[in-house]
Length: 240
View 1 (cartoon, rainbow, N blue to C red):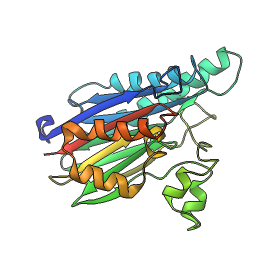
View 2 (cartoon, helix red, strand yellow):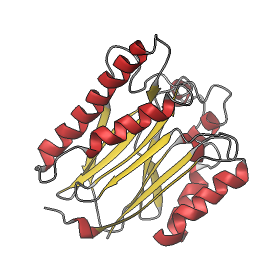
View 3 (cartoon, one colour):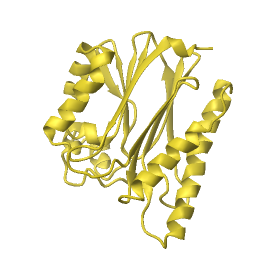
């Protein structure tokens, strides 16, 4: 079983320069080899409630599960948070409360990514950056149809219109991909507060050229210098 000491990571979240409340939640569980970013929606006392509930639900996963059981527990923790958020929205009299989720689990030389919404997970391998997730958003349909790039989608006026979120609808569909990890891989998990101020080329260059100790700060500074209009969350995980 992969040892947690085979990973190095850094976690950062920032309210940004415009919002008064940070509705993002970040979670690092190195003993579980799980890292997660959740971006809340619905305003103060709603968005931050939803994202924190997702993180807290995942944090309750028992230590010591085998990789398959851990993956199922991660999915069920997100589904459990979905049901709790829906119930809370009903208790408050309706309205939209929800959050994105992007979670990375690593075990036995493999990774699993689970996500809903437009928070993203990238992998840098051999100097090449790959976006592992696909946004659940209105503009994503244009990208998938070949009508624009992800960089162009990030600047589109409707870029914040997501089509899927934990806590929204009767059920939440959680997408999953899996693959192998290799020594030297670097994973980036982030909210859209970062990606709206960067391009894939910029991310690739910065992640390739910057040590882990400085990379999170460097990415955060790009988002803040660009305007910091949204909450910004960044998790970097290096496979040693």
